[in-house]
Image (cartoon, rainbow over all chains, first blue to last red; front, side, top):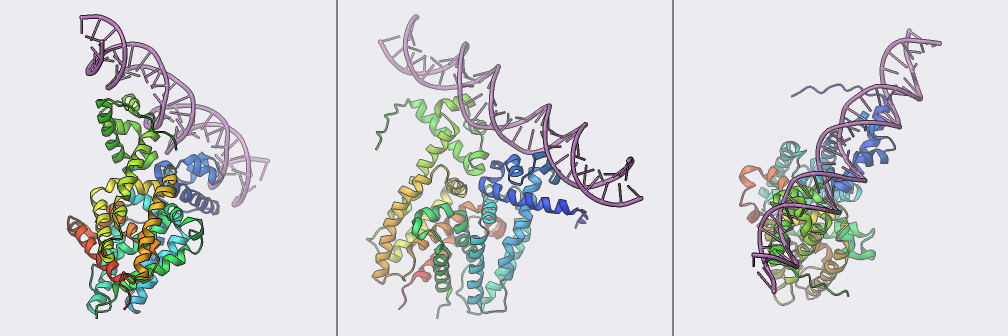
Length: 210
Length: 210
DNA sequence: CTAACGTTTGTCCAATCGGTCAAAAATTTG
DNA sequence: CAAATTTTTGACCGATTGGACAAACGTTAG
């Protein structure tokens, strides 16, 4: 392992970097890496382009920093999944947490989706390392539940994929979801409806056969 | 309604336009609209940039043409869903067809995902029109099945969303899926595993309560 | 006050972008 | 064949891009 540099930062540096990352999140999640421009981000952050490049060496530097933070936030719900409680309750909580993240952090979800869609050119190592390790770990827990007859025997990897897919869909395909549901049902109650449906689907779909 | 122009085309025009659209599908699905360049597409199509622009007036023109075709292909599986057969069999077939599309046309899936992610700037009208109409129609069929007690009473819209999400996930997040499953399980058997899991999940999850 | 250091910006640059144009080359038509 | 038409390309353009740089500005410690 390589030693992490101290990176001494002044108060202003800490603050400004935060402002830039917020503006960049907005831009990258909306237009993708190539679609977003430094000028645009600098403008949204309320500073000149050279000023922004004083805090981050390059556009890529901003993106990498953003992705590193993102992955931690993104994996948090899965990390909480543990062996202690009742399996069905654990899974239900996990689905709920993931759905809440899609609701509360849609930009982060889209940023992530954008990166994966393009072949994960900048975070593939993290996917193959950190993420895979965590998934493998949780898959073992789920396998334990299956062996114990607590949930139906099925593929734990695809179970996790389907939870990711269904929940993130509400952030990534938000425009489509709204358009299809129409103005009346596309509003606030949307997430409660989704939560009810997904709980029903996964709970009934995973009940152990008697 | 506006009359459709005859658009007389020579043999060469028909062929070259097809070659360009194929190259553009590859480029747009991989890099998004802004990320793909005309030079890149022209190069992949084996012609000079001005030559490409002789067949399509602009980059946007190529994209629009591509999206119009895409939507038809994309909605075909849902169109086939009808009231004739057994509800559970119908739904199972629909899931299978959608999963096959994710396997056989991943670039189309990613092109679509890219467009929706960015807020559907170029196909929102089609989403609000054609797609919404079709969904509304099929939702009514599903509601009929629920009233008849053939499947459990739940939200038909979110049912459709979850089928879209889970199946398209294997095309859109392909890189992640492969990375997590590893080289051994990320190969060819991947789709059969996914199909088995999804059938199990949706069939059991939608069984009417006795 | 002043030297040192952190911050900010105007100006500039090479590369790339989407797209134009006129002229050459190839093909079709009579 | 020759004329008309379609196809192809090299050269070019203005706009935008990510980024460099030095000079100016602000702040603080001695």
